Image (cartoon, rainbow, N blue to C red; front, side, top):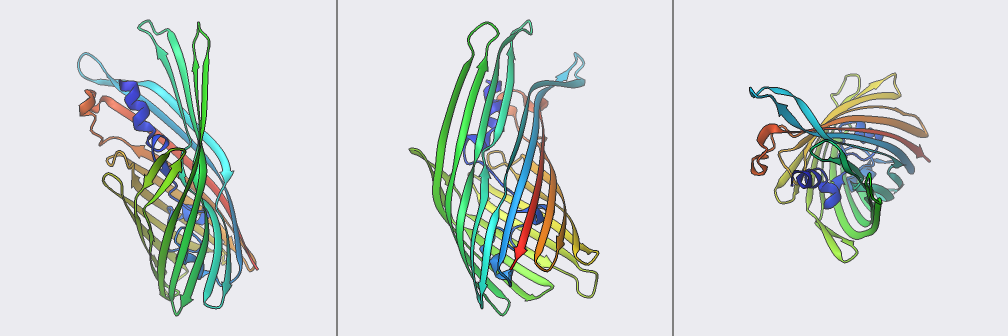
Length: 358
């Protein structure tokens, strides 16, 4: 029962809607995942901030490690350590978001492709008897993502920028279950499910000057087909604020707030700072806080760093994040294990982005 709980608790994204990707490209990642108020990100209105034809390309690497165990106590009730139950590791290299923006007077036309939800995960566990002899070893691998290919339309007029996006969603979930027995034949089962669906986004950015931006975008409720089943995703509201103090060495502050309602309201907070150094180069840092949609008491904290350069015809950005998930406040009382259960999760993201202006 405990092991079943471990599997279900730690794989909510794989079992259900997937884990949302909290950043867009390298600049977004360096700014704590902000994607509402900066150029060419999740908000369809951000294409209006481009004055030239622009092509953006990215690639990223993800690494994740998760340890699960039980706190061990002596006969006097003292915590003497942690008994590790299992260790999971995930690593994959993939193409990041790509987009093309074409401005024509007050209009902006665009097309982008990006990852919305991630299903990649690796679960490993060794089962032992009372004499600590191995009974079997289980490797359960999930790989896949929900992606969006989205045409965009924007209108920019006197500081008011409005954008619309229609998402044609596609992707797949591949799973493989390997069971190894010391004295019996091994078992391997694999499965692949294709994903498809449609969604819509609309956003607005008000930029009365180069120093201030206020932004909002809305993502409608949508369904994704998985063979004969449906996966539901909730309405998402996103608000962002951008401020650059005037008459100083350019420093930009960006804040973002996301709201989704799964079974309970889920809030996500993002904050980032960008300093211009050496004229063409920028240094970025930030953080994000967001809970698991199945366990709202479980929060993930990401600390992010970034570096970028902007030139006449091209730009580049590098982003890095280090994340930890905190299970300290989760109530396990219904399972009879109370506070003795512990998790330790680490997530690392690397992403490199390039932009070309024509």
